[in-house]
Image (cartoon, rainbow, N blue to C red):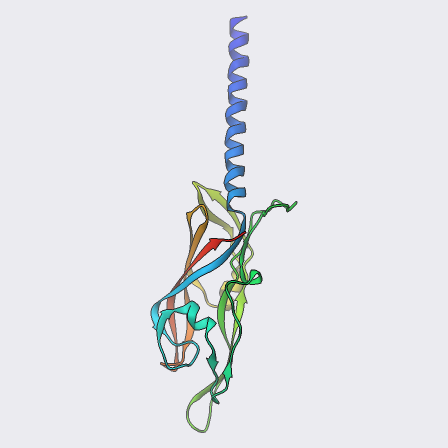
Length: 202
């Protein structure tokens, strides 16, 4: 009888521990879910990506500033990291029925439409910013983010390499990667390491 009671006790304890472990995992995942805005994007190299003649390590400010085209036209692409459609999304978010752990970083990336040599021997081009969207499937392990599937098509398209992601605290995460960009001051492509910091908003 004592053996029977002991076995029941052990089974009950195992069930409780399993339940607690499962709940902790679910809490971690749900704790990460939400919308995050970009706080900052810094470049390891000072760059001029908006063709204003000034180099800076503040990639985000370059993207938000006016772009001067090769013919002197001032273009405002209107990127605003405060707008919700530019927020990164980590699912599942509140009130979502799909529990897939999905992460879209929504990063503003420079895109060059064309480059050709003009009669004045100056590189002319059409430049714009595109939202780099990802289809990361992630999991939370030891309170950090692990990517289980990569959006190879997007990374190959933008030639992104050495991607890293880290959860800094309950409300912030950070990504780092190497990205080729066109530096108008140098009139050439350079590869710089970008660091973007995100903070939870919703």
